[in-house]
Image 1 (tube, rainbow, N blue to C red):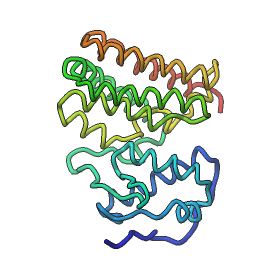
Image 2 (image 1 turned 60 degrees about the vertical axis):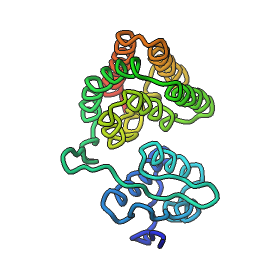
Image 3 (image 1 turned 180 degrees about the vertical axis):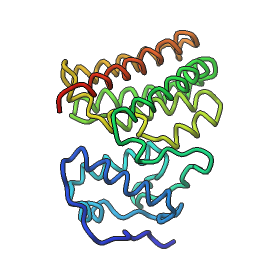
Length: 248
């Protein structure tokens, strides 16, 4: 199978490490969705991506991790990273330009509240031991990431994605897969930086909210799971509004 080659040889000039992760994600995800990278095609190597975007290996690995979390690629250890089939967007589409402002991210978060509160309730009723194990793994990865200066986006998304999987209703999971890590406000707005309590306390608070959701799902308490998810997403909404008002 022929490997996909970068359409343009022109390097993308770096601005700042955190922003470049999203630049790489958007570039590769867009090529997958547009069919320039077809399902089964092998992506460029980490070294090739580093050279094209003029970034470090850490930035490239974070970008690939986000693409994996969005179910757009899979990594086969010792072989490489390969494109998966992009979600069908013929009936529903949120374009990249729909994420250009904080107000846009708030609008998506309002959609998530209506979607994920019910998902949490269904997950509490239908979850399996395997679902719980994956959620615990995501929680542990989140905790480890925030202790090592990461934005913890992949593990954050993985936790919410597994809740959608645990509903047993593929439509929840399909929509979450389509949205990918874009659903996490930190992917677009640096809310930890603007938080008055500082990055570490901010992310620890998010982690605590995740644990409350997990505990309710583990205890098969549907109403508490819905309430915990609503609290988490409402808090995220409030944090975004504060970030919108914060000075640049």
